Image (cartoon, rainbow, N blue to C red; front, side):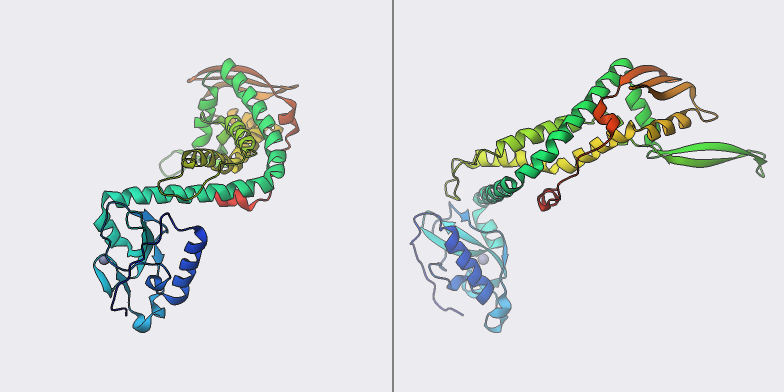
Length: 354
Ligand SMILES: [Zn+2]
């Protein structure tokens, strides 16, 4: 245990990453954050400003003599006080200290909240700068995947325009019907028997699961999502501006965060967009169309008429029910008839952002 405090007003700006990495390494090795070169342990005299330099670090106090806790610059400069703390810079004093996470919060109040927000923005910038590098390495594979997928999504969008144009409401009507059983389609058959109460025994038998629950949903947005992905990939070819963790905040922070978020969000949407496209293609597959037709023509349907099938390159919808009448001739683009979807690149990146 130290019996005296130290004060090193030697930092005219935020210490650099190399210094912080060495400090962090020293904490992990010794459990003594307050002993590192240049670290002050006296009580801060000016508490208007604080800059956080690390997330909460759990100090391995077991490495300290007797496993004692770390002293707190605020309330116990030479006595054991805390285990979790943060590296912090005090710009008015040109000093750095390791402060207990709760004490700093109490002493700095709103200034701490502001420092926390600034710190989180810095962390975001660091991670987006890393993301930029990773995407640069994987861009060719991503572009090769996204371009053709986007073209198919545009074709699916074209079918939606036709379907909604010819038969407004049909998509949401069919979606509602299919969603009741999560796409599972049942035929009911009367077994010709009665139960104890004299009711006919009817058996429900599944004939398969229909594709299209994603595609029929009114919020289906694969084409838009993939268009955004193409824009984000194009933007990722331009380097991010020069950025450093500074105090006050570096002027490029807003731009790094804005473009980083856009790219991250676009990457996160890639695999859902792939599933959306696959579901759209599955909806128009001959097997699925046949299945839905068979289901719509089951005995005791709510439909007075239900025709759902292909005529050449068109899907014909002829449906009459209590909900209304739907008639549509939907021209199916070749890419959807072909039914092939580009394979997703095997990418740690996509898993990481998911
Ligand atoms: Zn304290």
